[in-house]
Image (cartoon, rainbow, N blue to C red; front, side, top):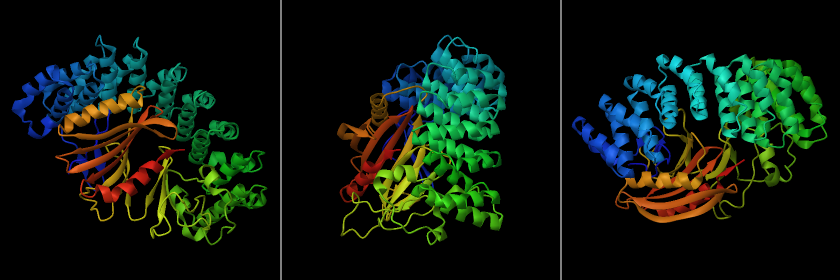
Amino acid sequence: MKLSGGMLIRAKSALIFAVLILICMPFLAQAQADDVDLLIETLNTGNISARVAAAAALGEMNDTRAIDPLIRALEDKEFDVEYQAAKALEKIREPAVEPLIRALKDNNSNVRWEAADILGAIGNSSAADPLFEATKDKDSIVQKVSAQALAKFGDIRATEPLIELLKSDSAWDRADAADALGELNDSRAVEPLISALDDEKGFVQESAAEALGKIRDARAVEPLIQAIKYNSDYAVQEKSRDALIEIGEPATDALIVALNDSDKWVRYHAAYCLAYANDAKAIGPLEYALSDEDKDVREMAQNSVLRLEEAVESKEELVDHSEYNTTENLAANVDDTTIENETENVKMKTHENETSYENETSSENETLAGNETRGDEELGNESDPREYWSYENHEFGFTLRFPDDWKDQDADSNSAGMIVGFLAPGEDVDGPNCFVVVQYEDLPKPYSVDQYAKASLQSLKGDHPDINIIEDREVTISNLPARELVYKVDQDEYQVLQRIVVKDQRAFVITFNSLSEKYPQLEGDAREMIDSFAFF
């Protein structure tokens, strides 16, 4: 079965459970070595869908004759063609390195920055010096992408250009620079990144906090605590908190002091962080915080004391955040006072590292180590015997809910942009036909959801000439403009419901794929899951 969807930019449509299921482009299935010349001609002269398909097929064929035509296709006015050509060059890899290095001096700036980006993805060290020279390019996008590519080599020559990029007028550039500086782990970036914690854009502040956590320099401790105190953006608070955990022991004393801060959320996050301090000296201050005037702080201190005592006694490193969030024996020790105003406060009171699940069967269940267990009247009904769970992903900042008879599976590193998938009841993980999947795509520059959806539809039509569009409408996700597509493919064998949203220069695609005969019986569950998708 082919996944009927299509990531819109660079067409990375795939579901990864036990295997990778790829969309096959029309040319890809039939292309042989003898077809290279025909594909190159199609790449130059075909319609949009044909050019996209030709670029994809040439990448799979790994024929060096395709390299120069693919580089020229980086000039294509249709973004989907340009993107697919870039992905094809990434697949060709080493034979494409020298031509791409030459392309760093192309007259077309689009070709130059695409070449830099591809060289960074390929990772051949011979490109390091040319990429450093490209950081001085007259075009700001080429400068940025070249510095980011150089950072992927761990080359600290990228540090200064990236620090300069933190001053860019573009918030996207500033965020990208912070992300790359975090990967470089160069102490010269610490002070500039601390300054970026005061950026006017929340997503730049998030990137700066995350980068400081990766560098783990003690100079960042107090600024990160201040970012929690004076920033009302919960995502920034959370990134700052996680960075303090990453910094580790140098942050412990400051976090103990922060337990007495006048701000409730500073005390709350400090208690959370100290659970991972692996230092017995934090237990006393946390026990004192059990008498805090705020119930949320008291509960978090209780959880942290239990977690820290257990870890100190067993002398285990506190590196698994998910264990903290799901340790069942904490439930018996947590005050069984019912959480008040659960629905209103859930965002501020749910604290997981990356991904967590919450049983939603009863609003009277106790709080467990920072997770809330709560009923949800929007899902199911009195006659529905199933339980419902909440999936939260703090790396990507979203949540959705799903019935317990849908099998969930996170994706590890993959080339399909998959974050998580949910198999319908009875589906086989090795060959699923009916599932909901969440994918993402980082965009190289800002695109609206309409632009992204248009590229998606073009890609779909190229992959599935028989596509039958049933519905194409505007919707919203977390107050952001979004698009919903419903369509059938493969002679109507499969029906697909897909929603697309773009947030912070990242596209998210939530897809329900089903055999058409099963679609009516599964649509209710799938729509509830997709409707519940929200950013926090």
